[in-house]
Length: 151
View 1: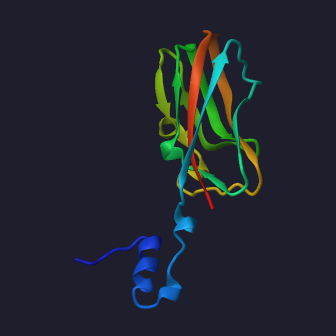
View 2: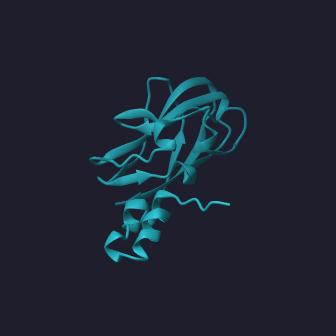
């Protein structure tokens, strides 16, 4: 049986004999931070954008730690999750419609490029939700949970 190491693990193994090779944990993660934001949705069209939160330069959203809790949004509400430079960086076809509940970013019909390859913000950017389908919208609240790290 062969031992297999991740990129971080390989660097840590090398550091056992030469500490100058030690990888920076900050480069692989850092402290996880959360922002929880709420919006009362009373009207929404496919030309609208919900600006969730502006994150600082150097932020990396962790899609696996992100979700939205929502009331019943009506018959259909789907959209893209991204930022102001790439509206589907984290996913597209995230379906909120039908009933109240929670949807994780991982439930998007199409995962964005940054789902597997972390994207480091080169500048302050807004994390966004852009509706792509809105059918018989019902007034409801949404609470978005965005996990990210800096470094």
